[in-house]
Image 1 (cartoon, rainbow, N blue to C red):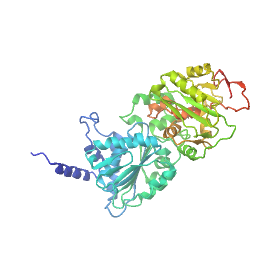
Image 2 (spheres, rainbow, N blue to C red):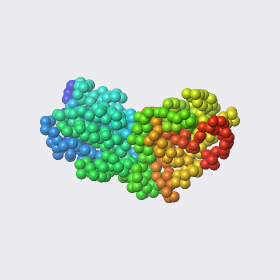
Image 3 (cartoon, one colour):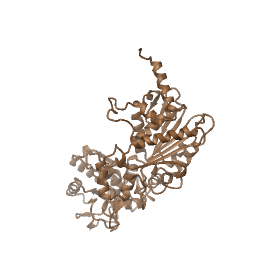
Image 4 (cartoon, rainbow, N blue to C red):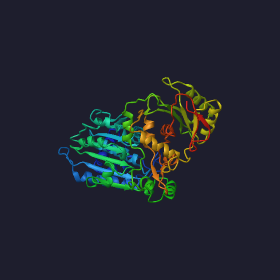
Length: 499
């Protein structure tokens, strides 16, 4: 039997793709090299929940019988889940299936933060497209995926979900094909984005898919999966313990540490909304407002600096500055964790920052994360004559009995400050501020999610967030002349100077 020519192979691929128009599960099973040498060598195919989701989606397509002319009702589906079940992979499959089976389809993919969108959601699409049997039909870069022969009418783009970017979700129509929207980590996406996106579901065979951990007990994602809009959406709730992709030992530790009925386990494991309040400690709307607010400071506002010291090679050492409500004007200073292992280099940089003048002012107080090498660094700076250095124990006792420790106390102050403060638009800071969850312990004290717990669920250490939070460790006045004082016991023992 002769080997098919390249044109014949392309026709076979095209026929196979066409047969998957209303069968996304068949598409995923047929288009990727499951079990073959390479990245999928040890994978037999989609997980159970993924198979069920794709099968149900095919049923929805078949029920609508879109003829390419008369518009049909939108396909709407929401997936609420615990951590690590393969949501980003599902997004990649959906994009490949829609784009391959529907000529001149147009889509938008977004996520709760630009970092999530760039490094996880869109990155998954870029990673899976070359594995797809028909992936060579398309080109993809950081800004766009498009058909190589019809780049202007057959495409999908990543878009940030900031409210001021809502127009990027408008005007998307494909009357004879599919206009689609995919929202990742949908709990934190602003309402305005959903409102504008709905306008793209009025013609053709439109689709919208929402994925996320249910960190909020309000908002569009909650209404779709658990509330008033359930009758118009198909819901899938996935417990992380049922997925073969998750770290079952880590999940068992979470259940043991927090309890089966705790909000942490409800959201991060069971895919259920928090029972009492939102699990996300700082919401994106609060952060976005601070990013857009004008930065200014009063004449008697002291310049404060927080130093978050890296705990490992993957973390950064970060200096962040704040003067009153202005945490934007002076840019952050960052040292990669690998370089920060040389503690003297960090001491030298800190001393340089303390010796500098910023718009006529010097740093009134440097608050140092005293965990690990942070304490010795602060000691060395004081030995060098810098008396305006204070070490802060994140796990130390807080001045407010409603806070479990100093870290919770500082972040609570930061959260209260954001509605009047001004911050920069750094994706790192945005991700850090919106990253930590929280819960209340048996004494009803606020406990902020630890860096270790965040890393365990795939969220980066909030180095920038902790550095900014350190500037709220204590109030610092700017006296007319230098006066000695002794720090409160909850901060540390060394004597410092206000000026």
